[in-house]
Length: 344
Image (cartoon, rainbow, N blue to C red; front, top):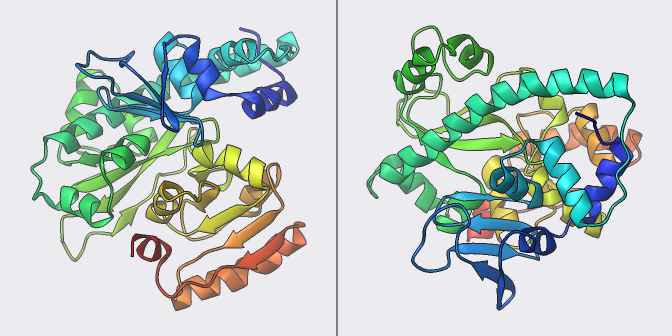
């Protein structure tokens, strides 16, 4: 497989119009600010497939799928990301430029290994989504989601799921002889799952490719960590990932500004209420590598961190590092946590 040059790939990402891309495969009908169609992924009685030009995403309520133009092509055409990139480039009439053969061969080997691991992540994600759907409305996981003010739109758009724990994933991976891979990805331990009784938040890279999961505890146990973040692996490198970047990228590029918040729910709250150019680091610290990755899109950041002592210390710690790396920095001081502020 030949691989597209980075500069060319960036041009394709910048030019991608989800309406034009999806419209190549699905007959869309304009309804208000969005477009609707019957689901191309499942059988529905009424059109349940929505395309948002403003957000540059699709949502399919029948299948539970959602994402950007590249995710749509990957799901609809059953191809990996490099192939989807080429298809979108051809639709958007961007001249395709390829890397040399030696580089392409090396990249193909890396992609083949990652695709095998990503298939496990994708299967786990679909299982987590189905488990969430099975829960009664009074289950703590459902109550946590309701407390956040998330409806079906947000659950689908952000791929939220539920991990029951026990041998839920472990037994499935053992049956498929994939326990070694499951441990490498941080999904299971020696005999059971790593995520027990947790609301699951999938984490994607800037291209919308699944790289890991974070889990929010809803067991109520005092000795249980409130959050579990992904472990470092060849799929997930914390210092290269911004949560929500696959959805925020176009808005950051367009506004030349990024809002930086602390948590996954802060990102969802901001983006769901129109502030699409919002991302978060996956953990407590923002690294210089993350800053440099962000600088490819903008050199203007607004820190909207939690107003507690930890949030203030984090802002004071990161401001000089951002400045050193050539960023213009502003601070948005809120009276409560960002997600609470938006929800209230």
